[in-house]
Image 1: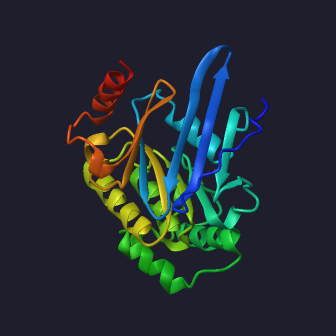
Image 2: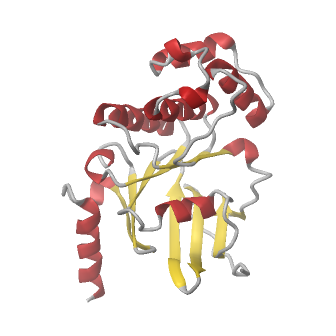
Length: 250
């Protein structure tokens, strides 16, 4: 697919990332329909939607893993170049995979080196494992960790490296409520320290308590994008936003 030629740049200096008019279809089935949204610097954004709404498809495009789409994506008001922003961006998909030849500590050490050509101090890595309650897994292969432990390991890397922009596809999936809340709070803290974070989720009644902004998507369309202070307290937030949008369109 050919990308749109015109990029509508954003005058707001607080905007670090923008996706504009993203369209994707497969065999006449529209997966994303003219999707536009932007991310504010140093904020925790949540992409909410039911299963099949288009969350993972959108994140795969925005992260550069899927190039078969129409539209434009830019970082800091420039057409995005994943090679140039390699040290500024991290993306973790829902299904995390790890090399079988490293233990947890070696994985953190080598991942950090590949990311920014620097080795982290061993004490710093161990302290972070203790903070995330994974110190007893230090010599274990990451692929043998539980689902929750794998998600924590991914967040540890985000926490240690603190990239400018982070995308996480459902980091809260298949986890119990205590682990989900633990991860939300850590991501909130990391955003407060300067990273811009976007995660996809369908746990709207929990994650909204930690997010700065909520972007709702349904059937491949952005329904709403709002600051958390402008949102309803409804437990079924996505459904409420859809109803609100329908009223606006009437």
